[in-house]
Image (cartoon, rainbow, N blue to C red; front, side, top):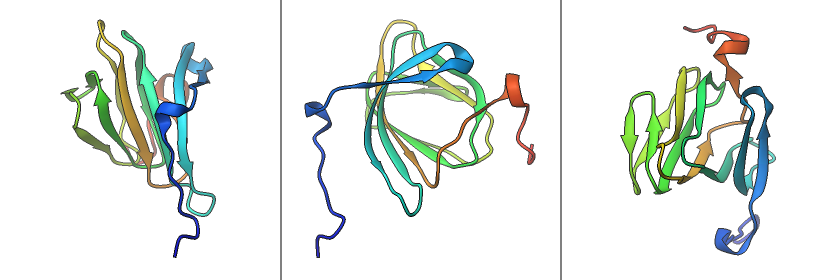
Length: 126
């Protein structure tokens, strides 16, 4: 059965620009899949050299699979082939190194949201 099946070559589609006004950020992004029923989302994202998504948290858990470059997080640095998991409600930061872009798959377990601690404070469970 192939209902709902699809394949997407992200190398053949252009980058959209995700505006993040809370931190004056603009991020290249390619939507791979957002499931209408579950809210699970998969995006290919590129952080430009020097970019960091500052202290924030999500109501969803999410994973980052590094494709190219080095992902810098609050807990360390991770290269290509590394998968990093962030549980829901975890205060975190992540970005690129000062010298190189990082490209990765961003995968959520339910609908995506973002809460910046400088605007909304800590999650209720903290």
